[in-house]
Length: 353
Image (cartoon, rainbow, N blue to C red):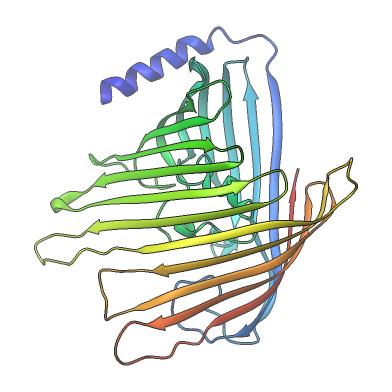
């Protein structure tokens, strides 16, 4: 494996020497945040986004600011670097930026495919089909990301591409450290793969799998699927996920198996004109079921997440989205412990530039 990665680096270094004399620069970014008011629920100690707040707490939040720069050497080689600030990236308890993207891409290294090396999004979300089908990352993360089952980025090498000219079938394969933004390394790498297929026009399916071993016979793997319909203006998707964490060690800790599924939809209410199909108003809705450990039938809580809202687009790439964010909890034990639902009213704003 070390020899393989060394060869990749050498090939990229030599090839970049032949880049064209006049490279192109591309800048883009995104920003989204909210005004929120907690309608119901008290600080419960759970991991939900608003669970730490008591009822009637309100305020303004910037949940993501992102800057991305792409340096295009020629048609086949480019470099990417990006920085992001979000509601959990803090230094000295102040909002700060972290690097989330720093990689080189060799396009068409084989027909219809690219090779990447560095810090990059994993196949689980951004370059998989999950976030593309959902389309509302500004409202909430996808189910596996929301519940901390996968890292959105990793440091490693990736092959991504398609099998045909029409892009009906595609794949992603990645080998990474498995540490996310943490630069730590070990002898245990993480392996990702996903395959997708567009069937019957606007229908799409995807399968995702990853695996990472650890010390003392510990390992984990994730299986995730996606089946959905998306045309130019509307979307409906079903996304199940299961993670198996084998925590076997000297103490004999039992495996942990997070399990859940997500159903989300978008429906266009209004467009400018029949000729100009720019969207003006959309409705969106989502339901998640999630059990943090389906292997434990009598302890913990099952979670039901619901989100509904209206997407108002006064100008292209600028969105104002009143929405209701709700998580209810069901005790799995015979004691029927009551945990109040977290209900939050929000006005989310989101723009891309």
